[in-house]
Length: 157
Image (cartoon, rainbow, N blue to C red; front, side):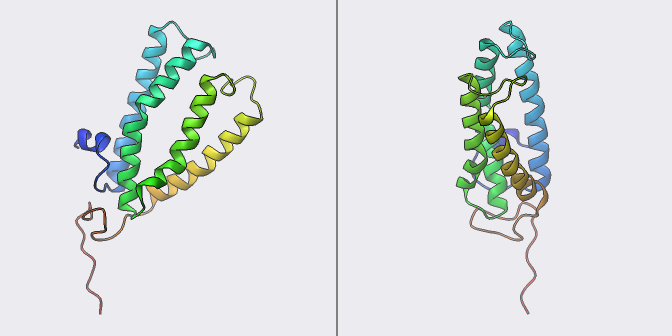
C-alpha cells in the first residue's frame, strides 16, 4: 500500500478496503503519538490541563491533513465533491478549538456546548461511516478517475 499517496494526495479514488486500512493505521499512529507527546510534556491523559489540551490540539491539526486526504479520495470514489469533507472536519476542528480554549472537553463536567458539538459530530460521523465505510464506490470511471477496483460497467442493452 502506498502510504505516501494515501495520506498526502487529494487526487484520485480509493476503495473501501484501502480506506479502512488507511484509517486503522492512521488511528493507531495518532493514539501512539498522542500518548508519547503528552507523556513527554509531563501531561496526563486523565487530567484536562493546559499542556494536555495544547498537545492534543497541535496533534489534531497535524493529523488533519492526512485524514482529509483519505476522506477526500474516498468521497471521490463515491463521486462526491471534495468539499463534503468539510461537513465532518469543520465540526471536529471547532470542537478542538473550544477544547483548547477550555470551553469544552472536560470529561467530568460536560456543558451544553459539549453536548451540542458531540451530537453534531456523532450524527455526521454516522453519515460518513455509512457513506465512506460501507457503500460501494462508483462502478467504472467517474470524473475523479478510474475505478480503483478496475471494474468496467456492463454495456447497456
